[in-house]
Image 1 (cartoon, helix red, strand yellow):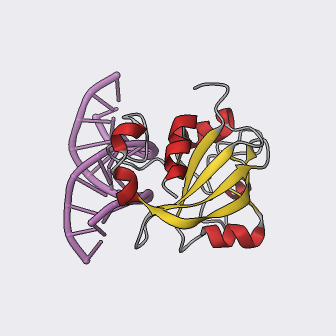
Image 2 (cartoon, rainbow, N blue to C red; image 1 turned 60 degrees about the vertical axis):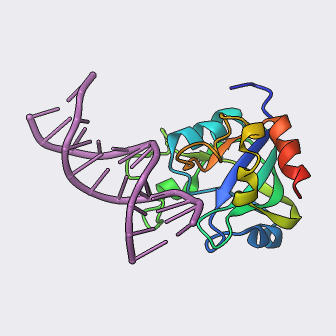
Length: 156
DNA sequence: GCCAACGTTGGC
DNA sequence: GCCAACGTTGGC
């Protein structure tokens, strides 16, 4: 991964946490990510100020809903230590945390939701490496190149 | 609700 | 280390 990575996409199920929720709270610890690849992107790649496209998944019209910024350095996800939490991980310890996150700060909602169906029309320009339109499409945190960022936002 | 894709777990 | 079983994701 490039140490100069500046842009990301992060998925959220709007029923659980939507762009409107982020707008309301302002800044949110992006907890609950339990996939190693996604964790590595947050832990090893993200820096304060990086741009983040917020994507709504598993809903009536999946698509890009807004823009946010990375607002903290990576740090351990507190929910892994909490036995009451849905995200509790019995194998994680404070000495050796397994899951990391960053805080994400609201920047703005898009003027309209950019639906996945429309993004797919540009799959070729976005490239085969673009995780959202790649086969499978299950990764919840992944990098977006400057070129992809511009292209996606030009659809707004 | 269905189901394809895919990550993780655990027996061997 | 293999791989079948299982659980989860997420579009439709």
